[in-house]
Image (cartoon, rainbow, N blue to C red; front, side, top):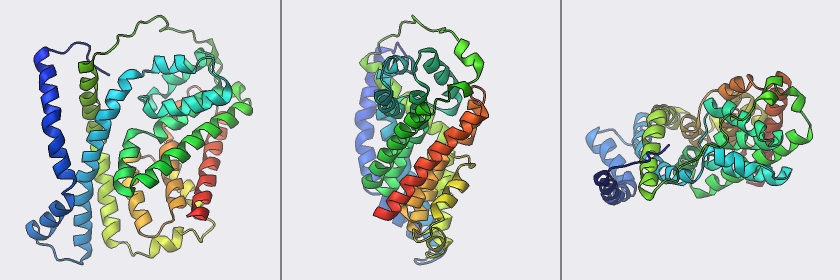
Length: 347
């Protein structure tokens, strides 16, 4: 994730670049309203109050806001991640008791680099180290569900309050689901060959990154992550902009409002088979809430899409039998269902 050796001139350039870009970031972020107004009404000369105008203003305002937040947070998380690695994560979880392991695994899942393609190597490494199956699942649930992309988009579109609610409930779901899965003693539904795997990377010495390496890791993280998800952000915000401008305010509220008992199960059923990441789905969820969908229902939909990713489930089929996958999806979906009802009741 980071480059061990960086030329002295490049080190200085990176430092100066940060000092130059930070005030630019601050200026742009705190003037987005004026920029969106200027482009919408002066440059594009759109008439206020029209559906198209609302959609265009929403798109112009949200895209740079999300991108600016994304670059800043991913840069900082990229630096933080230089203190972590899959191997260090595995070692940190070895020998922990069940509940302590669940809590630690879910917490480490937030800051450890993870994607669906790394699910199997991580799973094998954890099992090989003797880490309980439930602790492993706590990590696999938390890692895609609670990450820097989701956090940035939630803060940018909903504010800190909902972002904290999402992270807290996501952690609770990961911890409790892992604990329940371990208590069900489902190890027999793990593919037999998994337990025959021997460690192949023990004894590998990890280089300790320098300060410059950590800064470089931040820039690398921004380049890699934003490079992969920017198109999803544009598509998600475009869909959200269309809904913002053209969907009647009371339509979605009537269908998925907190007064309808079926709204949360329906949201989960719709969300589980969908394939999207936080970048694509959160802008859409923002508009759902704006149009009257209750917070609990919107969170349930978002968590089911991100936390029960169809590609991840398909990939895990290589190491898990269908019985365990079905229980895994059922337990996590039940946790999301309960969280949705609680928030619809409380808020």
